Length: 373
Image (cartoon, one colour):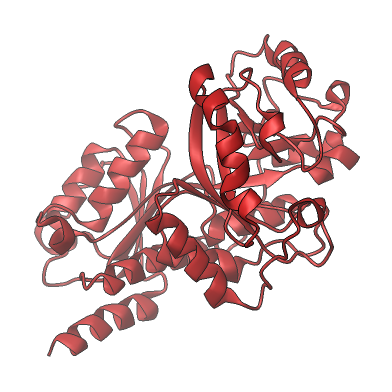
């Protein structure tokens, strides 16, 4: 979760940031504000006593807002609009300063989605958002962003949005792209945040709500227990199915996997054996590698692995070595599944849940092999 602070509006003294209540990232920026250097310095001073390091990321509205005080810059290009000043003009104006300051930067596709209100970003950039009903255009814009080399996609409903970016849009973008996905605007409850995560968001940005109710920060922080609905397994299996559909689109056997810890996805993967010419490039292996990179360690004892088809012997062994404590799969695989050949491959304390969205998982596999006949 990223806390967004507008230097013109945020009151640092009101934010209850502490060891037990802190965001994963702090984004600093606004559509109209000037140089945020002093604000960032004050922010650093306020969080300097925390043991936990919180990256401060510049979320600039224009080139004048660059400051070398930040840890990194979202190098934004407003791909939803056609105003050249915000497609490339502001980027050119800030490029040399960022390069000479040796501040990390991340090429980011910034895509405005209609949130039901006119936002300051719309006024400043003289651009219109993409309607939420036009999912095809949103997805196509995101695909183009990835093809142009953007390393992040930021779906923005806008400050004070009445309607946040819908889960349907997030799912559709997630199914067709592989770069990390940021979603912001109009998110006011932990349930709305979790819905965005479940749909495929990697980072959820919340700003305007905390300007009005800074005391709510504790409700959104990662160390706070948020009630999980009874259909959690189905939600995460549906995201594994989205990964499987990526494999199907690439003419791979459609198997997908997500790994979850503390109700957040830490790794995703889908079958890539043909693409990589690698017989070991199964969905589970890809997801385990991604999760280990996310957490910075090879063991995943607090994680749950969701995969659309029963793991094979090789993947079951990898799951066991990673010490994953819970495995959830959709369709059984009596011909090659671990249960037939290596039923003790998982960690001794691991639990298994089978048959989650089994029909949907089977249908996808059957669709693939039917087309091959």
